[in-house]
Amino acid sequence: MKKKILVLLAVVVIVTLFTTTLGVRIADWILNPVTEHEPFKISEEAAALHASLIVGDWHADTALWNRNMQGRHDVGHVDLARMQEGNLGIQMFTTVTKSPLGQNYESNKTSTIDKITVLALAQMWPAATWSSLTERALYQAAKIRELAQKRPYDFALILTKSDLADWQMARETNHDFAAGLIGTEGSHALHANLDNIDVLYDAGFRMMSLQHFFDNALGGSLHGTSKAGLTAFGKQAVEIMQAKDIIVDVSHSSEATVRDVLAQSTAPLVISHTGFKGHCDTPRNIADELMLQIAEAGGLIAVGFWPGAVCGSSPESVIEAIEYGVALVGEDHVALGSDFDGTVETSFDASEMAVLTQTMLDRNMPESAIRKVMGGNMVRFLSENLPD
View (spheres, rainbow, N blue to C red):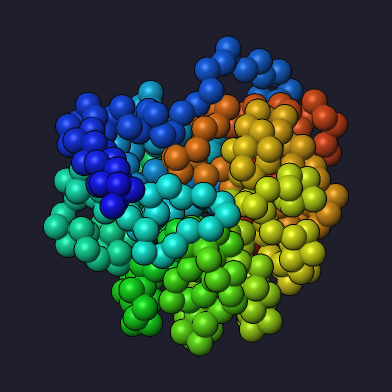
């Protein structure tokens, strides 16, 4: 009983904190910090190389926050202005719909009090989002579509291969032209209803991760209690997703789930934000053996920017993990997966992406590999796997 009272009290405190604009801003600042640092020194060589890249990132939870993405902010990690400043050309924006209070990498019960319900109430989201995980995903996706509608010469929403090609062509004369895609952070947004795959697809979703911090109707999470594989529903969902050319993301899936998806998959997979267990042995990362299988099947492994994934958050820590990944699976299968705005602390934000280029040059990584890892692999993968 005492524990329940403490949990209830914590929820009340969180709701109270969030129910003012200032409170939301403070929470965003606390939960999505950038380590205080002096400005990074970027050489002329690195600046020139970085400016010539298409930089791409597979995972940012920016749409979760009541932050106008058109303006430049001094909280969190991503907005349009900072994307343009950092030459972050293409960003996958993921939608978070449920996350347990007290979440951890080891074990979370599905029934635990949900933080996103608290956040939806506190940020005064529409009433439909208070109880529907599908509506939460749709509400966040609408923010990305709105950005494309209001800033059509600065930001494009990518839905198809031709959209991607058109954006690349336009960017040749408008270097600040950024682009985004929409994905889920866990397919509990389906509400255990396969018809909702069509609902989300029609709303612009082109990547769906299967699990987040807990087991769901599709199968076991890496951080759940069962550690099980795909359910029958999960197998049906993956089949439908891939038939519609929706990219399947296994970032938070249990190792058993990843094996099951690999066994039935008809398309390459993505891990949108992760590290390599052989480099950083934490419960957040799956076995190198599975990373190899994903790469061998044409998939991409996107390296995160926070300690749970790479055992550090400095640019050097990120690049060390990337180097390990390139040595393990090859330079064609490694990408960036920041987890920006995902309640993680990073040592740089979207405006400072050039520090990664600088660090790779400092560590004598070949230019061809830098181009691939920084975004070339992502663009190629999308050009091959988005809907026609």
